[in-house]
Length: 295
View (cartoon, rainbow, N blue to C red):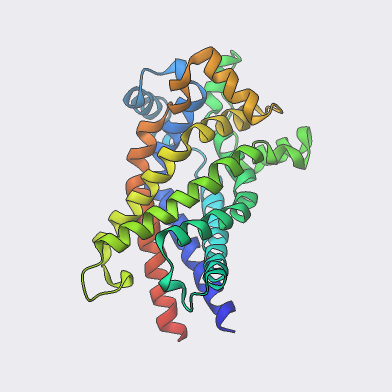
């Protein structure tokens, strides 16, 4: 029963963390997607942010929030539940009696395997989010007025025109992004916690500010490591392309140069530090509250 209870607590903690992450980081995530998919239309992060705000208001900056919430809550609930299970698996394989005794490298390995399962829940909802965020830019390229369409109608349209497989465009690049990304994510978080734990205390006792900072470090490490794969994923999903990840990446490099694989990195780093910090604060706080309630 203890294993089931731990998995439930990790799942709820991931859900709360995912919601906090979206509300803090969604505006700059919209900027990131626009710059990744239509870099020629903007002169930089500030230009993209201000033009989106002036044309579409806050609603434009929060485009795709509903699927982003669905994506992040689904992804993080599965991710953190599977992370807890994978931690126990790694601890068993290494002969460690407790997951608390795992090194940052061992926690990073658990995160790598957990991301496989979370990618399956993330891909469809993030595809819808990316298409909603880039809808105005697609309309400009196609020389038509942008549509006013919500996530549910867009999902129905994708299913009608492309079938269920259409919702999984970019799954390979999602795996390529998520699995190594979460290796660095959880490894960076646990390494930062270990470094910032005062003598005589445990990692769970470092407090709000240090947890926020460690979460921010984890997010920055993740995105710097995986950003080219994220650019490719966004382009595949926005265009509905059936091309392979490798061919899309090589096409971007040939036509736009290597630096095009880092379009949108600025707003991503600015977004991810507070957003991922909020994720881990909500996750750790939810875990502590549920353990106190259920133990």
